[in-house]
Length: 62
Image 1 (cartoon, rainbow, N blue to C red):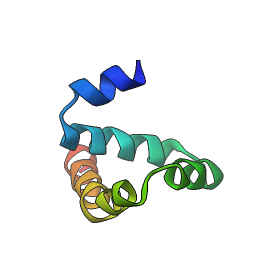
Image 2: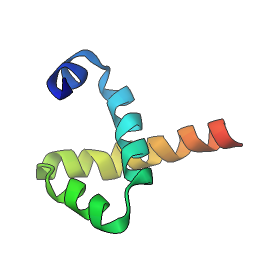
Image 3: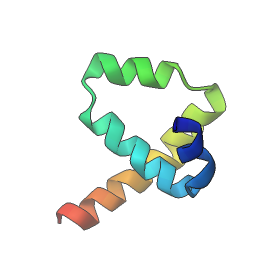
């Protein structure tokens, strides 16, 4: 199911979904999830995903 989601969801949407997962995670869970990512994916998250998620949340929550 996870592979299907990743393969059939636009990459920028995946970054938004990943942000929601990290937002709901406690610090230990967040560290575990991030440490399981390949280095290039972590870089993409920090450079593109995290700021994109923050902008999305500002628009949604006001």
